[in-house]
Image 1 (cartoon, one colour):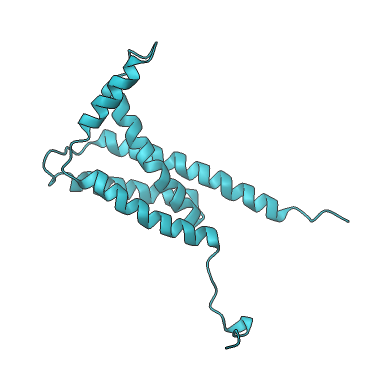
Image 2 (spheres, one colour; image 1 turned 180 degrees about the horizontal axis):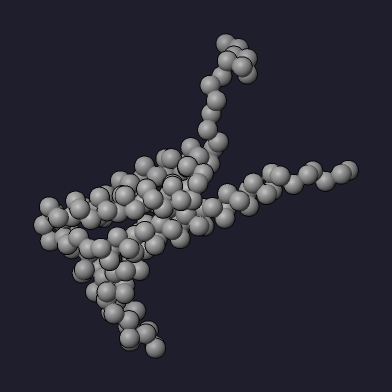
Length: 152
């Protein structure tokens, strides 16, 4: 069967946006398990904190710092992927704020979990870092496309 003429094809999203959408769905599934499971993440934080404190000169590191950093790292992909998908960095950060607030509210009903505004702050900070990285990538790509082709 012959391919339909170009005018009959539905417009397709760029590959990077499709990949970002798929990655975002996978991220949400993983993040939901981490954020909403009754598993206490403090045990993991304690183990990581102990391991860090064993390194020379890092005995001052506290477990609450490790937890804050983990929350930042957990939300970097969200800000990154939302920014790639939506093509605007502030949308990614604002949606991440909403997702973070909803996740913390949902933890009210999860046994052994405690919602925290500090976690929301760390989550939004992580999303902002991810959004900034993605925005830099978008701007770089746009600059490359805008350059005139070299004369031959």
